[in-house]
Image (tube, rainbow, N blue to C red):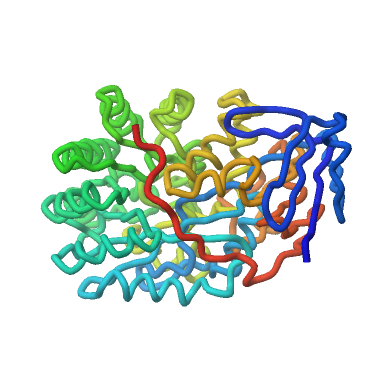
Length: 467
């Protein structure tokens, strides 16, 4: 049976346009847009009408960096695909791209199959996968070609975490060369993990065990050095490069230099680096453990460079790196040894609202908000224009957003499966009201009306953002 919904009277905001328009949804897709009050709009007929007067009508968010159920440090991220995607929907995100993990000694296929099994039938919104490549050898390189063909078109490597995910420069170069041939995009965790491990050992030997030392040993210069090295390896390989969770001014400078030279080098930052700082890591009574993630939070003065990078497009995307661990029983594993604190923050529910606050505060424009949170991640990861915009033929992933509603962020009211909020007590202007995923209302006037299994796996094309 055909179903039709019309969203009337809102300000439709995409990365390129703002227009007061009515949006017609038919059978899960955007069928048409017409300026509100015109004969064309008045002619829209539907089973259901949503009044968006005084609201924004925006594309559903695309979060290109999440870690549901991720194993780390002897425990697992506390959000499952069911709880995490439900929380994402509450926050106006309608697509995530999560990371499947190749185990050392295992194949890419085994890792991908394991993540398909975790996600299938459990997601409230649509999802795709990147592939973490932990073990580069000839068979791995062949498998990369096969994965690209079936819609897993990006591969993450780590210059950090020796003995876990770490790849050396030779392994990185080989994977980059393969990506240059098959169209894949290499995503890089750029920190000099070998040097960091030395600094960790030395700090612990001095009795420096508190969470704040996590930030002190993972130095901004070691993020910048690894970023520079990754860029040069990608240049040698002739491959595009996407640097994840950029946190430091010096790393932004490396990306800016590469982009000024015309290289296909891209950067992502995350809300935690834009809104939090080492002040949080230094909170007393082990509270700082809540803010342990890698790359680490930086001193507040780095934030200006990140905002400047976002405005000038030296940073293209804001994703969350959502990887939650409860304070009780998980973060506490690192009491007395900061190196044992599981690395990661919750945030998949907060990203769209925090970035709207950045619009209110004058850091970015409305259209730039949609660009960095919806359109560019969709283009970067081969999902556009199916995702990331409101246009005829696109999936009807649409958010009715109240730009005037006020909220206070709190673990008491969030929907992520974690016992604290990284933004506890923060006052924000703007809030999600209704969310459509492929035309189905998953949030209806601040009530959850979705269900596990609505979200489907979405194969991706290769990067659509190359110059």
